[in-house]
Image 1: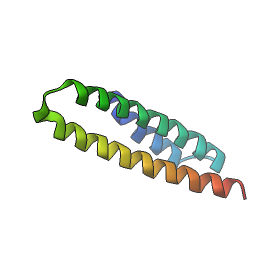
Image 2: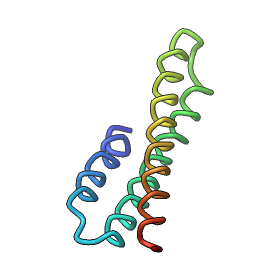
Image 3: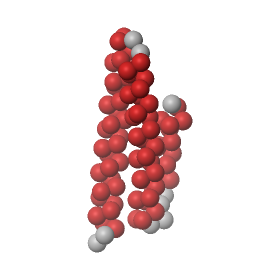
Length: 84
């Protein structure tokens, strides 16, 4: 879980140093794929644990979903600029 949770941040860092808009879009797509992985893992964990721990998992899921939304918007912006 830690690996899949940290990979998006590392890939996002790579995207910040992208050589072109096309490279940025490619790296952001990779980061977005990596964000979806822990999303699924968190859903599985939430369904299999005691109710006392569900709040923490729910918070992690919410944060992950917020990051996905940010990355998607960033991709949309970059792709719009790339297509001009």
